[in-house]
Image 1 (cartoon, rainbow, N blue to C red):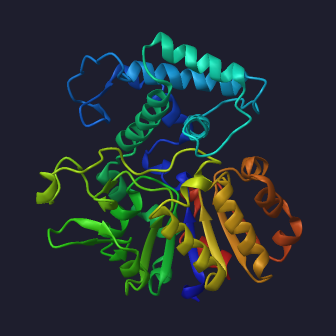
Image 2 (cartoon, one colour):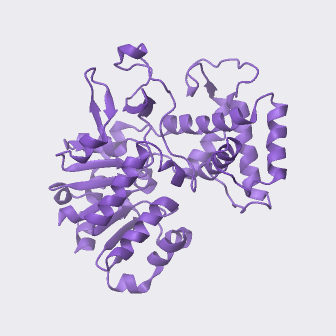
Image 3 (cartoon, rainbow, N blue to C red):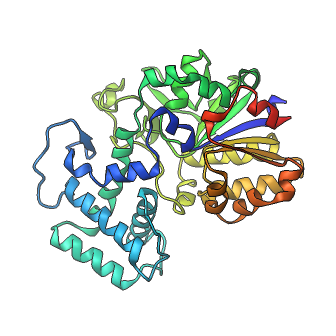
Length: 382
């Protein structure tokens, strides 16, 4: 049975461990100008001495003010689909789309002249270029995600029974894939705490620096595979590949003087634009692995804490669900009604279909992971 079962994990898994959700992260990012600053490594940091920025640089205040401007545009501008309470994912999505249009990667006719004029005026007033403004506002978001998503190891230890109920030991006895949309290191910490070895695609080179190697990952003998589809706060681009390291300022690479090429973590922020990110190197390998496993092996998918808001992930799930009438989905959520009403398009219809409920193709476990018992997942799979 175990070969047929896989997990898809979202932010609802991490919240009980004190990690912030999307709304809280948005609030913290919007106040980061009070405690973070841009440094010479071109990343924004908390706890380092505040630098006096040079003309043309995107200081934290400029980046935060711009993010607030975009939030206002998304909340009120009549030329875009108004979002009542834009969060950092909505904001990043807009900024990345504008950047892709500005650099000629993809044309976006939805960007009105009024919006572009307002943004150019903001850049002019702050004596910065529009291109750098777009790039560094995303860097600020990604660097702040890295800072705020570090967790307390003691909390993981004290609440480990929650994760034991989510992923019972019986499902760890054979090969199982843990697909996660979270950037944090909660699952890694939990697996280490449990003494479970796992494969995540990173393997040491001669200097014991962990590089991504999809070929080794594909053929890995490890029973547990952790697949981080949206990147991670401990992953950085280096030497035209990706490394996993706790601190990019201190790495085992004599050729780079001991620090990474990039100090900004590789995390995928945004919503619709993530579909483009899934085609990028390394992320494409992991997303492809996700699609292949769904199509060839998985008949039971346990979804925990995911709101079904990612179009690329939803495309994969709806295709998989319709592929075989015996495929089943067990969903653990904090609020069933909110989940169904907020889920995007096809997945919302699947979740709300009473016929799927009656034949147990869709089983929704309400109340979040705190209300799971040791038998909840086992009973739902039966």
